[in-house]
Length: 355
Image (cartoon, rainbow, N blue to C red; front, side, top):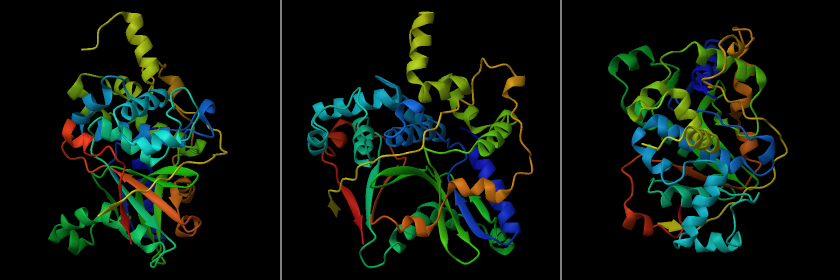
């Protein structure tokens, strides 16, 4: 689902005007929400967060497209094959043993450790960070890390005029979203907000949930925005926005179309956190079907959507964060890709432990 970041930004600005939000930071505007489908409900959140990360990478920097596309593109089942291939080359032997060396075609849960293996195997830089809320500081180290990640660089780039004006209350950065996992579930973090009382809430894309009213509002924004960020990056690898999005999000569908047309394709410590069960069944919405007739793509919704109703599904407040003792973050520095020697040096899964 595209155009959610502009929608969230607008809602946050309205909440700031009402005095409810002091400041907010969001990831780059091309990030998308990918929902679980009925067939992977209960085990697919890790895979869907992976797809959000892949789509964001392609939008954020097309240089990563070949690494993600070859030899098999991203997808739920394809990711399982990626990980098995990495195991066969000696990556994460501990994780392979825990999953009995079999993942393809199963409904086994995966977590940030497995995603790290998949991205590392393809030469895409990523890093795991661990947080133990039972230690001194509780939730503060986690919140401080998120604030530093999204806000530090933006604040350094502020001009004198920005400072005099108080700058914008809602900053859309060029940062990648990252994946946050606890025992039982994972989500994609897209930013944070500082509330009127000073508390900080994380902002997230949850693969198990996207309300219809928010979906319709985002569809309306996307259908009316010809300058969507997707068009900028897709031009660099000669794919239309919808073809690019569908190639990343629906690789099997894209491959079937290709074959049907008979065209050729031009200090560290080890920590593992696994996903658990998820109860919400949702159906993914393909918001960019290039063959869909124009009138049917026009959603019906009120433009004056309540900003609280918009933000609530994306808000992860501190009281909910405190319900779990341990978290693991997988983030992407978007630096130069790793060559084979750099990949092999990272075959053992390690993470930075924050205290």
